[in-house]
Image 1 (tube, rainbow, N blue to C red):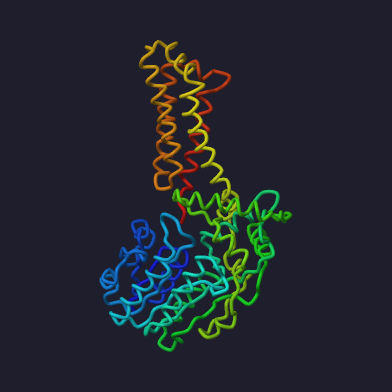
Image 2: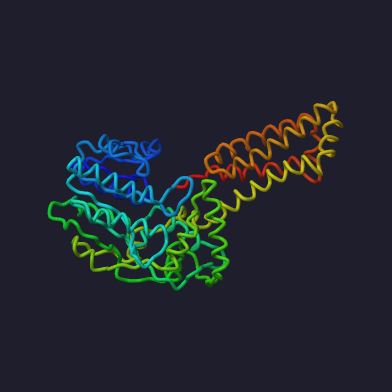
Length: 430
């Protein structure tokens, strides 16, 4: 069967793609940024389309010859990169219309457990509206509502949980008693594959959750044991602190940084993730427990590295931003005369020395601002490495004695460069 998977390079989409390809289906991967996806999943045929903006005509081109469509695309919260209504509602409306026009035999839509009218977040409201419009369409649709998806690969909310599990000395948690029900990414992929069978139930909404509800505290504790780390106490964070952190993460989202600690994620944690465990039986599935999922994917050193480094990464980026910004500001203000004096003492004329200090300071500030903007962060880190290398070479030629300065102005640049290198190596989000 020729199957199109929208969002095929995401966490859920990648496991669904792998499963359907292994089952012998011809899989067309669809996404808005597919260059890296082509390299990661060369066995798939790739088509570029953005669910938020693609027209019915665009989908008619992408879906020609397709017999089934799996929609794994979604967003958590509005930001410059994501528009919830455009993705969850209008995008699904146009996709469903194109499927109807083309006579697509099956549309499987991935929603989320717990979606309902009693939840007031924009995420839940738009997800529910999408489910309603699909229910009113004449298509052979199936809506799957997975619980908290755990996968061997770490991304989004489950990556945050791993980071919390690896936190040194204690586990900081908010809403530690909230209950969640889980599903493995591979089990979810099997469920999608079952939906493509001729005898699969259609025009139904099915929750996909294991019967055992776990508190967040219990879940993170089990993750910590899976990582091979010893037990530590849980610190229950006050809600105002958690909300302040979420508000800061919301602000960073407008700079392109999509943190899983945003307000929508916090609200989802507060409400919990619950669903009807018996629904999986309609697809002939017995979902594995969280403990079984952990046992089936033994952790290694890479999982421990990831968990321990999870919160170190934003700390490094913040440190680099402050370092370069303050270096530039100090160079233009209180440190200006001293910097010019260093250059003139080495034989440089006052005019060129002044220009060099001003230019260098402006470059430092520019690199800090470029680092703050997610789309240019990689270029900023590369620039920091180049500028540091130039600074060290220039310093060695003009003032080699500074290598022996007890304040270490040259030596201190080397750790900063390695911080930039570490940040650049771990900048990928998925």
